[in-house]
Length: 161
Image 1 (cartoon, rainbow, N blue to C red):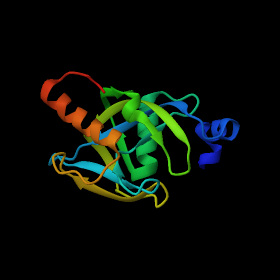
Image 2 (spheres, helix red, strand yellow):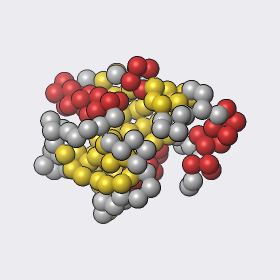
Image 3 (cartoon, one colour):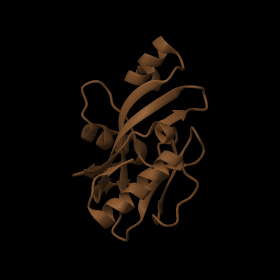
Image 4 (spheres, rainbow, N blue to C red):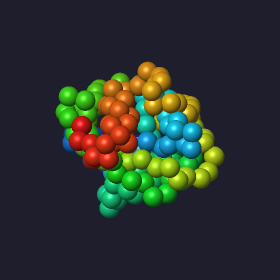
């Protein structure tokens, strides 16, 4: 689906670049060796986590499964929520085209997946596995999500960031 055809794209055509409150989901995909999958994003030129915005009629689990498949080629199974990101200081993002979104994001992790890791060449320029303690340059809200996942693993407590 093109951006113009998406729910957010249709809203943008009505309201321009002003700040929109956007529900979404992102996922920390964990491989057996403990490394996590990151995507090199085309919009900012840095790394982030797979995920995206809700479309009409979707719940957040459906969002994270769909977006992960679109962006990585992997079909995740049994994603588990570990936290929620809503701090406007970090979750308000100005995109290179001037659009502004304040995200309200359910954060999931997944250890079960299949498929071939494949960058879509549009949103995702590259996909690589990284150790959570040795991350490349990332969007700050995404880095905080990885840190929240690490805290969740240690404490078992749902993370509100």
